[in-house]
Image (cartoon, rainbow, N blue to C red; front, side):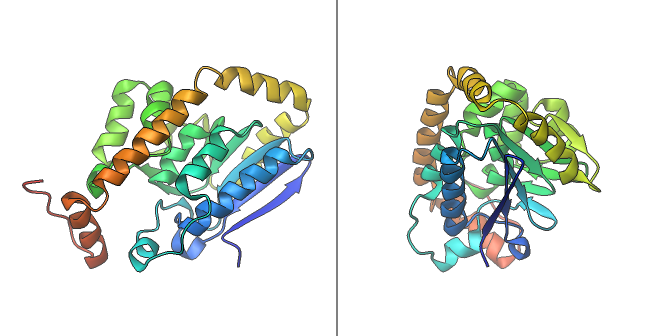
Length: 253
């Protein structure tokens, strides 16, 4: 079974994270497959809009800690390649966050041209609680979208935020009821797909022109910080607590 699936109708490429039993957690295999989807859709003249959603009850539970702990084969593109492919994606990119969004399942909202959330969805950036730091350019995009104080709370506190919080803060454009959620989002995608490709490409390029290099630099800086903190005392304690199903003890860290 493919970890990422796609279908194309009316100029819309619907890409689905397809690991419902793992709450669509991002393994290296998922990162590579999703990167390939963005690169393929960028080159496909039949695609005007890309919509990303998740299978089952979650959008994505974030990084797959179990796969990481078990040891994964080397990545072809990895996190860096995936994020570069999204930042460079020239066409409208819509997220339909249909449920739980944790870690990159939340930070990726900042990379979308527009994000829609289901009413029951909840989001969390648990990086501090994992003894690491944020990723997916969120240290840049979140401040730009929601302001410094909101971004600081979301990225530092590791607390849950509701779909209403996301919309009120500006991290998502609108919330829709769970029943018929994807259909509602696809109506927005169809509105865009009916428009001329040249106009969509040029307008998005102009909107992102002041930000693309800063987004890329944020990714590089975040990945360097992640490399420094990963495997450190706080991160080891957090991962050990996760695997042992207990609360972490960060006293003295």
